[in-house]
Structures are given as structure tokens and as C-alpha cells.
Image (tube, rainbow, N blue to C red; front, side):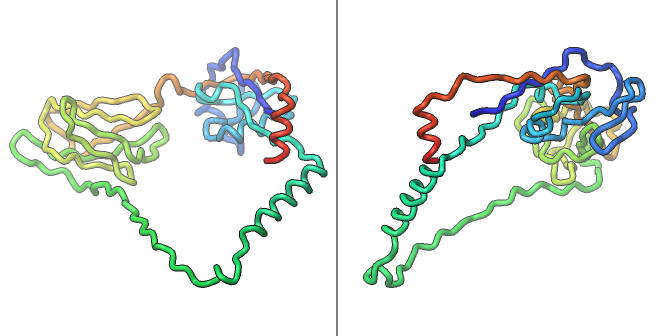
Length: 243
């Protein structure tokens, strides 16, 4: 069968989570005198397990994309008779593959080479003036919590010239830029940001990326609804016994 629950927040809270007193699972709201659980860093399975068999009300903080129906397939119980039958069939199958005396000779197996290609990011250095009115632009890309945004795409607008931020969120643009040029910063799940090179370009720039509006955090009392599905057909039950 399938366990399914649907999570919604009908009345979003207007309080600021950043102002809450931090707790082990989230933050404590002084206005409501309740702990608000932070689900934004949890996986779908962790969220499903949290709400399973939980009767008390919960105040939580979610990304909007996390307010949805959660489902997890649970294997059907296997009856003992079928269990031993399945084990016997498996044992018989394994015996049929045991090597004979003639097949016990050493067989040379072809070797497979696995080539690991590591994507290298350029290591930025200090900003230098390439020529009059042009600059080598470098900087760092971070999220709202100042964590480095590894792999952020950085593209010169109107061209196909660009690169990705390295393991520390840093970058050094490969082409000298001049005032008026626009760099486009993009990352999946975040708002695309444009940066226009000023007349007096700074030695290093810092770009802070923000979650896309469709994935902004929403907070409030969580409404948990059990979702019921139709009864499993008999043939599917029989099929599940042999899995």
C-alpha cells in the first residue's frame, strides 16, 4: 500500500523566522509561544516520517515547493508459506549456476578502464587593469546565509562567454570587461541576477543570490490531511508476494 499525506499552510505567519530564538529543530516564536520547526533542509522522507502518526499541531517553515502530497511505497507483508516457497526457488536457481569441474578453469576477464574526469574551476586572483577602461573582474557568489554558491553560471550578456564559480564560490571572468558590460548570474532554484560593470569597477565584487519567488519560505500552522487510495487489486497483491 501507499502512505500518503498532504501538507498545506492555510494561514501563513507574518513573523520573521530570523528573529526567533534558535532551537534544536528550528526557532521559538515569542508571539505564539511555540517552537517553529524548520523543514527547509529536510528531505521528503524525513518530512513524511516526522508527520506520520503525529496527532499534535505543528508550526513549520517550508519552501513553497515542499507543501505538497508526500507518498512512500510500503512493501506488502509476505505470508510464511510463500516466503519459504520463494526461498526454495531462489536456492534452486543458485544451485543451477554452481561451476562444474570443466568450468572451474581460470577464465581471463576483460579489464574495463574507468576514466574519471574532474571538472576544474579556474582559481581567481586579484583584480588587475587589463587596459585603459577595461578590467579583469573577479569576485564571489554566495547565498542568503553567505554560503558559497558552487557552480553558479556567470555569463556575459549578449555573448556565449562565461564560466562557473569554483568550489569556494569564487570566479575570475576570462575576458576583460568595460563599464556598461552586464554579467548574468544564474543557479537552479534561485533568482537570476544581473550585475552592470560600473565606471570605477571595484577590485572584487560580491554577488548574493536569493531563492526564486516560487520557492520562498512560508511559515505557519501545518494542516495535515491523510490521502486514501483505492484498494490494491488482487493480482498486484499476488505479484508483491514474490518480490
